[in-house]
Image (cartoon, rainbow, N blue to C red; front, side, top):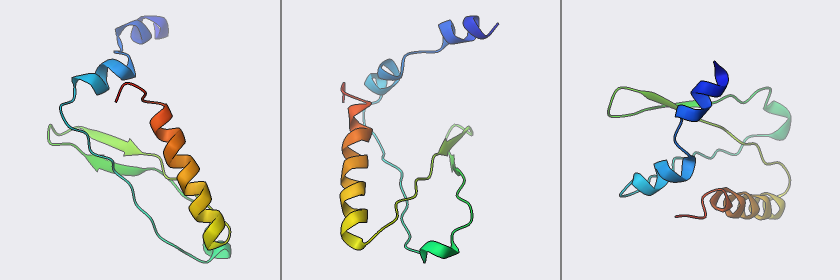
Length: 84
């Protein structure tokens, strides 16, 4: 059954190529490192009534370390979508 579902799913690249414009959804907030207990996914409501989920990421360190990690993460994110 799972193999059948996998065959029916379009490739990520095919989905991205079909989109005329893209929207990058992200959020940021600085909190004291020892205050964060848990980070979950954030819901995104789509115009068609469906809901998507956004994976939240945690970066810790000094300002410089966080900025460097963020730049690397952004570059890596777009490496997943070479077709755009």
